[in-house]
Amino acid sequence: SPIPDFLDETLDRFRPDRSGENADYIPDLAAADPEKLAICISTLDGVEYTSGDADHEFSIQSMSKPFIYGLALEQEGLAGVFEKVGVEPSGEKFNELSLDKKSGRPLNPMINAGAMTIHSILGDPGAGLAERTEIVRAGLSRFAGRELTIDESVADGEWREAYRNVAIANMLRSYDIFYDNPDEVVRGYIEQCAITVTVKDLAIMASTLAGGGINPLTGEQVLSPRVNRQVLAVMMTCGMYDAAGDWMTEIGIPAKSGVSGGVFGVMPGQVGIATFSPRLDRHGTSVRGAKIFQDLSDRLSLHIMDAP
Ligand code: GLN
Image (cartoon, rainbow, N blue to C red; front, side, top):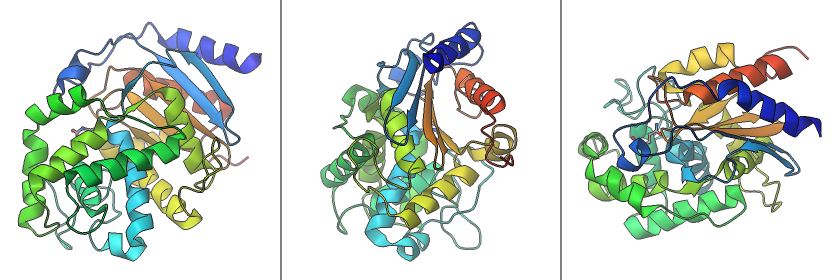
């Protein structure tokens, strides 16, 4: 059938590109096979088209951030979360030690300072590491439509070298952004990032967002329409960090990257798209993933600002 052929042919054109480097600060990511390459597109009724290493598992990393933001919004409401984390693009790297000068809050939930604050909100006040970690694992599983698991080897490796994230969490604690133990928030956030997915999972998660918060496999309304819109709007403006403007003008598909090499994109009302390829550019986004998204955007006219 024409769609798998189209996807095979697309991957074949980008397979020879070896530019970029694996993430090196998380041992298991540094050791990942850089040749792996995969794509999956899921329609809103959950039909999946794949090519390449579509069953290869990798850690979700920063691609967890939009979904966790959605879970926190459902729990606390938009106003409650907004008191803690803003919605303005930072124009900075994902792991910058930064707070908004005026409000004193993290600028947005897609950078690590905001994502760790969002993580700390989950559960009852004072919920510990184990409870928050399970809320995250179970919550992400609802987007994927299957029970996801945590790769503890990825989490342990990241924890041993987590100097930057520990610094960010201590900054947040010292400014009373949260009152939890900073080490527990970092460890929980690292467990969140170590949840294992395939491009098939990510495409279903993306098509849940594309379908107004309804999981196409289970039919569950995971996010309300208003929260879903909020997640996508913040993801579109902040999800690519200091490359957000470049990504939206050139590719025009709201998307989120992770340092494992995954990227997922959301075409509201249409499809969820996910790619995997470990070598990254200087923004921490997969090189071949970005090129494939650009190619799909150009050839299928997917830029959301193009008039139909
Ligand atoms: N766990 C990684 C970190 O916090 C996730 C970063 C990312 O994927 N951009 O450094």
